[in-house]
Length: 113
Image 1: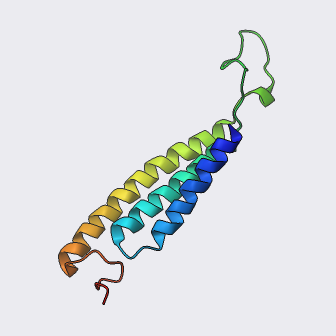
Image 2: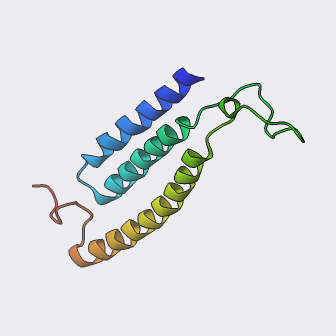
């Protein structure tokens, strides 16, 4: 499980950085999204993955905090997903406006020579 998660984080992060280096604005936006997904997965994985423990505390009993996931990374990731969605929508609107003004979707506003 940990290997699959580490590979997913690495592939998403590497693909996001590679797309950030591309000359088109749409590829840049997709690269930023992939990079934010990889950071969200990394933060979410810091909250531990308890396997084989009950999801809730039993009535009248005290539970061991080491057996449960940390809720703080989960709330941070949820907030980051909402903020990431809003900024992606803003980037797409700005990209469409820039394409209407310049006639192209290159990052620097000029087509390659």
